[in-house]
Structures are given as C-alpha cells and as structure tokens.
Length: 95
Image (tube, rainbow, N blue to C red; front, side, top):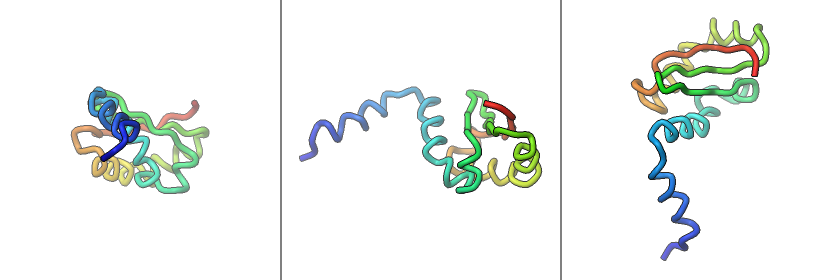
C-alpha cells in the first residue's frame, strides 16, 4: 500500500486549474521541446490565449530563434501540449 505522502501531491495536482497544468507541463517538457542548447538560454511562458512566449537575454538569440527555430518550437510544443493549447510562438528579449 502506498504511503499518503507519495499519493497526496498527485491528488492535489488533479485539483489544479487546467491552465496551470498546461503551464506546468510546458516547464517540465521545455528541455525536450527546445533542446539542450536553447533550454539553457531561454524561459518559456504560456498565455491563456495560446501564445508561447520564449524569453531570451539578447536580440541576437531572439533573431536566431525567430528565423531558425520558431516553427519547430511551435510543432514540438503543440505535440507536447496540444494544438489548441499552443497556437503561436513569440520571442521576447529581456527578463
């Protein structure tokens, strides 16, 4: 029989807001979505309108992601979270 301490987090997670669950899944899945190189240099944020914001530190990286990786990030995020959950990817410089 499972210990209550091992079951309780799963039960509590089941009561969370579906939007929170998607955001949590995004954070957990980000290394497989972005890859090792981009994971270290980016921070994902999912809006309730289905926009995946990818925060980067500088404009050079923002341009590279926008030109080379935007479509693949969109497809991988949609595969992980669903097409309705992620409709667009936008790159933001700063914080």
